[in-house]
Length: 114
Image 1: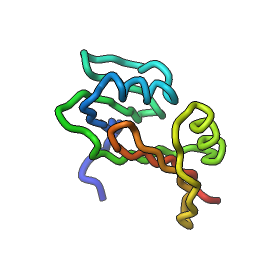
Image 2 (image 1 turned 30 degrees about the vertical axis):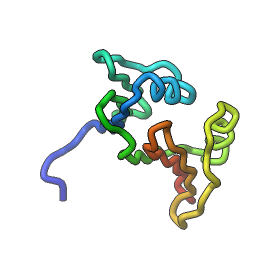
Image 3 (image 1 turned 180 degrees about the horizontal axis):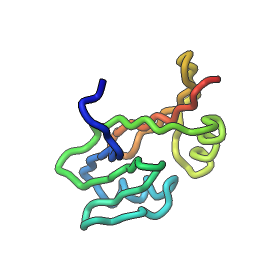
Image 4 (image 1 turned 45 degrees about the vertical axis):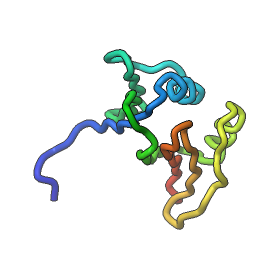
């Protein structure tokens, strides 16, 4: 049991080359919803869930899992946008497609199996 109620989630992805990473994320997320300060961008990806891109000295250590309704359609859209997307993998509970940003941060798009 949780000790207290939570109400929001922000996943932070640190990148050393902020401008290159920002362009890559804008390819599939469009313009950021918020730019709270220089070197930081935020996208609201779902109710109460945000993805934050932050310039840092080092990058490439994060893994983010994002739920989607149709992973095949998601993969096709990523490929059409010029983003290299892995094959869809069946993990019994979910179908998953993985991508990596220019610094090696991993993003898994997952669809719950019914």
